[in-house]
Image (cartoon, rainbow, N blue to C red; front, side, top):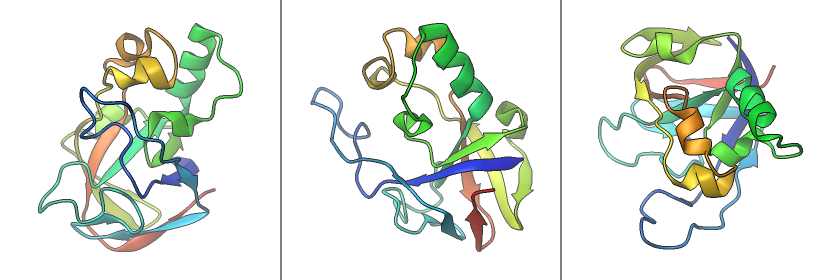
Length: 151
């Protein structure tokens, strides 16, 4: 698995905003990020959110991003728009659900698909939520401390 982008956001834009306007916090691209066992990514909005949280970190496939850009004829919109932390290349993320895996020496457990929500239609393109079903990314727990870097 290759890491193409790492993103953090200190605030929620969609989570907890149902029935309200989306937040305006941008995703910040970083060169490296500290992973803390059972807590998440230092500096991210979900860091130490709650005990045993299933979405301590989220992964999203660059291949899915490219397919969506082509499908919706979108250019110039970065993958950060999907609000996932780690943009990967070279792995089918759904195969990691209910699996332990390692990236750059950090161990993770894939808990479930990071299912798209209705906000994707606003954030990317009308119809994005349906197009992403089954390909929304991966939510995971962090099983060991370490640092991930863009490669």
